[in-house]
Image (cartoon, rainbow, N blue to C red; front, side, top):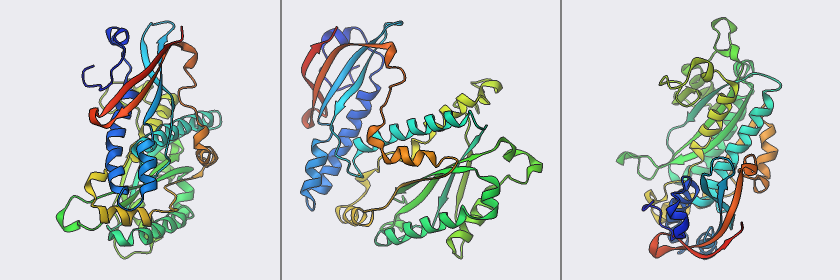
Length: 339
């Protein structure tokens, strides 16, 4: 509990509340967000101010489970700046996308059984100044790839997410590593040897190369999605093949490429170029049987988190907190018992 920088009421601390995950995560995001404020301040004061105010005042619901008596803190209300690189807003989008994926795949269970792959499609690292052109070529290439016969025969749907990282090698300084993470939905028969649907890593790399119309073989990484613990034998074979377990695993895995960018690695000049080049770029796209997620994602602000289990939790008090940079955490400025 000592690592959580918030002056929680003593009655809550004494009860050793077990679920402070949202508080811990938001503190980490807000601390990282200060890096973004410093980057924006020299050239975009308005965005710097929006980021600084984002998640500064947060209303928390201190809740108790009506059956087990366990306690938790859940975010009840907070402001959002909607700046692309904001760590707090990235976390919100991450959680909401995960929920959209879980709900959509659960609904699809009534119509079909699906299995899932997580495939990464890369290109040679471009100069930062060429970022927009490279992303446009990647998007056009992906559109061509999904129209290929091999793809249409094997892949039923996809969720594609753009991620950018900064290369670690000194020889790659001044460049970026843009790549697509794609969640692919396939039929269980995809893995059958005689179905003709199975695509290995070389097949994906070949399709991607052809779609990009490039003269080198790009790197692709292909992973089969398994429920957590399946590969280490922590769940039974029946559990690992459970449709519900599979859906939960996919929803959890989709959060990975939605993490906030490590802004500490970029200079001010590099960040200014990235900010300019990323304007208007759509980072997420859907297709095939997963296209139903597109409309939900377009209305992301209306997605409610934790709505499914709210009936089991009773609010015992409301806490209003304010983020203080000097303590790198939240301070309670008002508390009111509700039961």
